[in-house]
Structure formats: C-alpha cells, structure tokens
Length: 254
Image 1 (cartoon, rainbow, N blue to C red):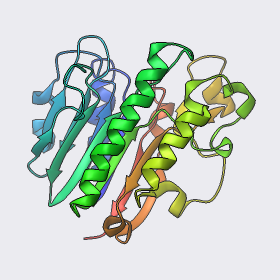
Image 2: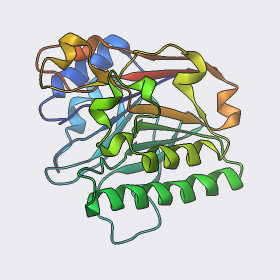
Image 3: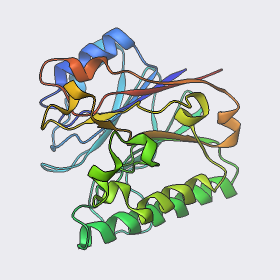
Image 4: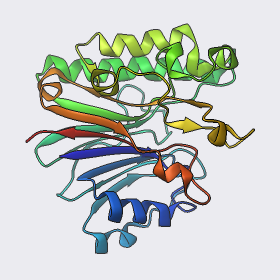
C-alpha cells in the first residue's frame, strides 16, 4: 500500500498538478495540505477513481485525503481545543488503516503568539497520539510538520537558526512524539543527508538544491514492522508553477 503526503500550496492553483500526480504515481492514499480555500473540487477526482474528504478554511490552511477505498472520518479537527478553528487535522480510516493528515503550524515569527500556538498545537497532538497508543490503535501520521528534525535535514543550518522550524523547542516537541514509540519512516530507510521536501521560491533555492526536510511520516510500531520503503519524489517540484513542497511516500506491506 502506497501512502503519499504532499503540501500542494493551493489546491486551486495546483489542481492539474494533483490530477497528474494521481494518474502518474497512482498512490493508494494521498494526503495533501495547505488547500487555501473553502471550495474543494471533489468532482474532479471521482473520474480518477478516488474517494475524497477535505477540511477547508477560507484563504488559509486546509487538509484533504484521497483514497482508492472508502474513507471513514474519525476527526476533522485536532481534539483538545474547541475554540481552534484552523483547518489543520483530519483523522480517518481506509483500507483497514488509521491515518492522520496534519498541517502543523509554522510558528513564525518567533516571539509572537504564532510560535506559542505551534508549541501548544504540538502538545495537543502529543495527547491525541498518546491516547491512540494507550488504546493500542496502530496508525500512520503524515503531513507537513513544519519542523526540521536535525541540522543535517537543512542545506545550511545557519540560515534557519532564527526560524521557528529549527528551534530547540520545536525539535524537542517532535522528539516527544517519537518518544511515544513512533518511528520516523524516512530515517529508518534513508541515512543520507541532503534529501529535502521543500525549496523556497526565492533566490533560486530549487535550482541550487537549497532545501529542507519538513514533511514526515511517523508510524506506530506495528506499522513500522510493515514499512517497506520511504522515498521523496522530487519530480513535481520541477513542474511548471509547482508547489514549494514535493511529495514524500511510504510503502506498507499488506
């Protein structure tokens, strides 16, 4: 079973990119982030053989899932704060698997409520994932985590030293999730540095390969045992008018 995560940076702007990816890569499940709008074009994907569900927000955020098998929604918001209206979380089941798609807050600029919100959101996420672990529910969580795990996941650590994505608090919160007994899929399969999922639009970052790795999959132990592969597909980042992110994929054995 192939599961892919991709921050598309506007489903409206990247509709044809998503359709092309579904046709060419044909993942069993695609989880996308940063829809940026209230309208989700579900009808565009039905002819391609995909069931879809989306959580949308005007102009910002938004997450959606595509699956070749029917989708059962568990949560459309991260539990723990009913006042939080940001569309960043969808938990669902498909093909017998519990999956979670997240668009974790960016947190910039430092010293503002945005960074405080990021860390609070990560603490709520910890509580939710701990509940799943305590109840022995195997799961995969993937998406745009907006955290650079280590300096080796960045082309130039000094360039990100004042960014929320690389702060010690952000990294510690990510490690806290892993300390629940979760495994970071990419690092299990790939030990090399210099593989990224995001390249800024500015200063020729893509052409220079000045990237960072902020899109991740974490797996509970039962599903880690079934992990076959985890790869980053750089191809869509080279398409015309691309997202600044590119897809990351895992393969789970039946």
